[in-house]
Image 1 (cartoon, helix red, strand yellow):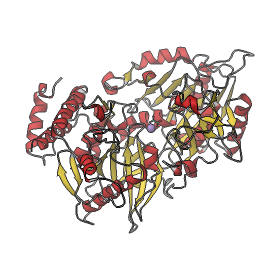
Image 2: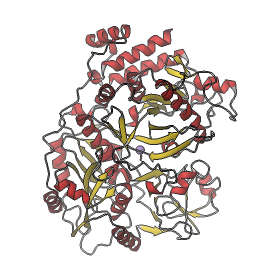
Image 3: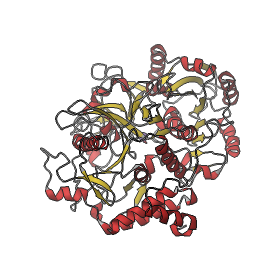
Image 4: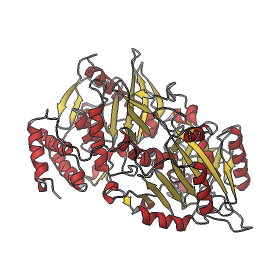
Amino acid sequence: MSMLANPRRTRLVAELVESPEATTYETGAAPREATRSAVGQRDVRAWVESVAALTRPSEIVWCDGSADEKQRLIAQMVEAGTLVPLNPELRPGSYLARSNPSDVARVESRTFICSEREDDAGPTNNWREPAAMRTELQGVFEGSMEGRTMYVVPFSMGPVGGPISQVGVEITDSPYVVVSMHVMTRVSPRVLELIDGGQQWVPAVHTVGAPLAEGEADVAWPCSDTKYIVQFPESREIWSYGSGYGGNALLGKKCFALRIASAMARDEGWLAEHMLLIRATSPVGRQYHLAAAFPSACGKTNLAMLQPTIPGWKVETLGDDIVWMRPGPDGSLRAINPEAGFFGVAPGTGVDTNPTAVATFSHDTIFTNVALTDDGDVWWEGLTPEPPAHLVDWQGDDWTPADGEAGRPAAHPNSRFTVAAAQCPTIADTWEAPEGVPVDAIIFGGRRATNVPLVAQSYDWEHGVFMGATISSERTAAAEGALGELRRDPFAMLPFCGYNMADHWAHWLHMGEVLRDGRRPHIFQVNWFRRGEDGSFLWPGFGENSRVVEWIVGQVEAERGLRPDASYGSPVGRLPRPGALNLDGLDLTERDLEALFDVPTEPWFAEADLTRDFFDQFGDRVPDQLWVQLARLRDRLKH
Ligand code: OXD
Ligand code: MN
């Protein structure tokens, strides 16, 4: 459907372009009732019994999150060959796990959003009718834990009992999952007390899908070729089958904290987002909190652990992947990191690129699918500039640098470290504040070789939502010429939004109305990945990104009347005035700087057409305000 096919939309767009102050227009979807009858108050024990009756484990263990429990499970996994202890001198308290080579990443093609109505899942999610999916799941889960122990893991996302926190219970037959949940969430019997006291909770069932017949020996990494990662957003349930890996199996993370929580947040008036969270302190000691959304593989952990290169600035870490935000009583947006650990991508995380991460996982870390050195330590591509002369690769085979040159990496590209956030040397002292921290700026970033400037400030909240809705990455390098194919990842939530993406935009627009003027965060867009004519990156990135943070913070201060505005208007947003971006000590030519902020007209018209096509996928659910933003972009490009 084209934008002009809808007369109501066309009229609204025309009116609003002419009168930008108008505020009475409709959004694509209204926020819903706070409580959904489908959830009710489930009884944990009855639920555990019903899952046990279905899956038939040989025993049931209720977990308490204690250090003893963790040590016991680790010892058991070392015995079973699931974990390899690392050299305690080099990497104390740390272990290596090697997964089955078929079980190494999230499986989006097998991830389902089973909302009552297909439209509520939207065109970017795999939808299945809930009753049919329940019948299918009954079949696959039946007897799936035979010969295994079923662990019951009560966990909190966010500090236990905190006003922004939520609780859940994961049932799993994987000790690796239990130990990882210890690191990534708060596992505690206090969660059961909260549930007994009436708190809503999310039931999450996980099995590796590999029942053991009597006397059958186990393998180091049991899993199944059949996989299901299923979310029921209305009844807030998660069912995961067949994988033991990361986001498929640690159900507090993507399944709960993003897919289910985003649906809760829509219904209850808050936000569950795929964002990092940092605190920047300026040289005069003013503190600002920034939340930033980037698609996977855009250097999120590096920004979360940024080491500023500019004097006087300090950046501290609160979270690296997920942020929950709620309007506070003062009209500000308060944010927590609902997780307790980092499940970070290892390759590319190195002593030069992210020394903070390297210090974080120097001890008490579980590594998965990285390479093992001859002295019992870990290695992966990018940890050090030069690889060791010999390694055992992620599949347990011998490896030398010649294999690397032949295109066989030592570590799997999605290999991970799982480590407590408290171990991070730059963790902010407020990272566990139950009431959260006030967000001052929200940043959207993509990986764009062309068009998108290094940094731009949105004109207002609605323009900022438009920036979030249009985040994209290019499949091909700019050096190849044309705009390339854009991969859209709105709000970096494409695989993680538990409901219709267009309703998510409407929800953001609604949240902008709830937040108080003067306390509402300001929205920015960044792009560290723009390339020059020769195909090389124009911006050095990493620690130098602190220069962009400095400008963003300066603009927040300008909005609050603390300093003059240091921007000028461009078709795509407010850009730093000449001289406003601190480039002291950087080896950047005038030409590079110009290229970093160039907003080429024709390619941007072409991009606007692609945005129209992208929005059209969502039909009438796209909020009118976003069509208005697209029309305004075109208008600004004309002038
Ligand atoms: C992740 C991801 O694992 O975004 O954090 O894929
Ligand atoms: Mn992520």
